[in-house]
Image (cartoon, rainbow, N blue to C red; front, side, top):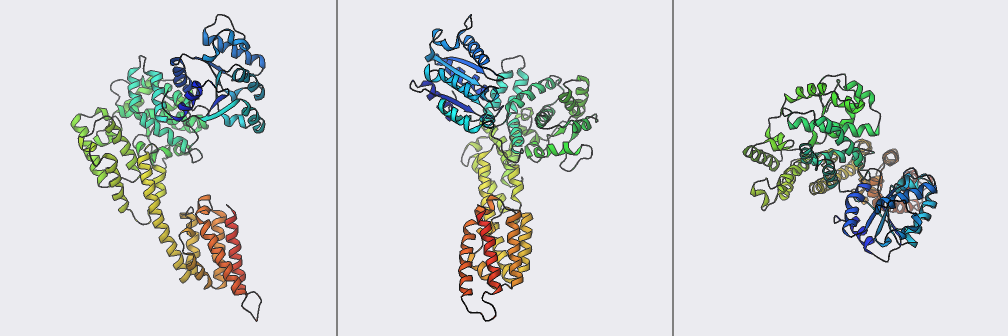
Length: 583
């Protein structure tokens, strides 16, 4: 099997003679669990002389159905002519060589306790290696406590399937098209796997603004099969840029159609007889919600020139009906606009460039990189493309020597940071970074982190100055930060003693306004990031303020036992305590 932690655990389990428990491979639906069994575990079992036996529990309702599925699985595994008694399987084969795969536990309609009890006969009493494939999230939603109790008795180890997206995409493409009459389509897909991968990552990141646990590869598989029909309509006059554009549109639309009803948006787009280029600003020719769907892709420079709406593809995916005449008219219009700029062709069908033109384009790009002429978020995309050429040994020798390619890009990023303004908005950069390029991502994020610390230190210094010279400006600045920098832990960078001294000098009205501004910030815009960053300095400020209030109250006052200013400072302490308690 492929060398990774998941495979290592499975190999150790299969090789051990002393283990009498089952394994569970857990991951969300569509993440490739069954694919992993068929393409990684089964070949390993065959190589080791073991017998794979696959059973799905999807839709199983009764004990009789369960037994029937088990019997059918055993029969197919060892090619028996008659259906065996599943409880006496040792009479038909050597159970030490058998490995059961029980899939779709969460889709069974019978009691989990009955399933585990039945399977336990094979695991504990017959010592049969057993692997469950499961989306445990769905099982736990039924009766968590009972499920965990029964699970503990049979499943000794649960492992999360590690999804290597790049590998999975290439394997899927190979499985679908490598050994078929569709070699041209196979070659095309392999060339654009990096584009497919990044598109899928962007899609999943934008669901609830965070990465899901795994990417649903079933949707990709269906989309590639759908696009194959589109691809077959192309003749030799259709250039590769159009092929890539239409593939991207098919993938984007297939994915969006799986998660929401976009029929109204599609019907609007389909009223046009030609493709429409996506624009960053609102396009009156495109229905608003449809435009919004594609914004997440357009902001990534990898797709900047590649996003077009194709009415013919939209109609095909919605209805399943392919009008080849309409397709050809649609694509013949777009084919007249063949890209001629070698630099742009590098990011698309680079294989169309002649040798000298290709190398000149590489040289042009690298000069721009070193001069910092690209946007900061574009460095990752460019590095991914150039790195791909490097892996194929297509770059000039200079890029394989010291300094290497990565060092050159890091030096260029350093230079770019020096040219940025003090108030540069780094959030836009981070949202557009190429998700696959960890070397560049991590480097840029580390630089941004350092730059933010510098910016926050300057901000804190300004706030203290405002507190000392113009409390009204302090309050206004805090209110502004609620809109422009709501995630900045401001007290992390403020000098505690200087802040307290500034508070002491405020009149009562200003003191109450400062307290209200701080309360409003954390009450309405707080996040864990803010609170965690501010928690320790706030504790120190509260401690020192209380000490000051106590000493102030001990001073005799003729007019009032507790000065109003002390009361207001105590209110501020209470507010800060409330903020601290949020953790």
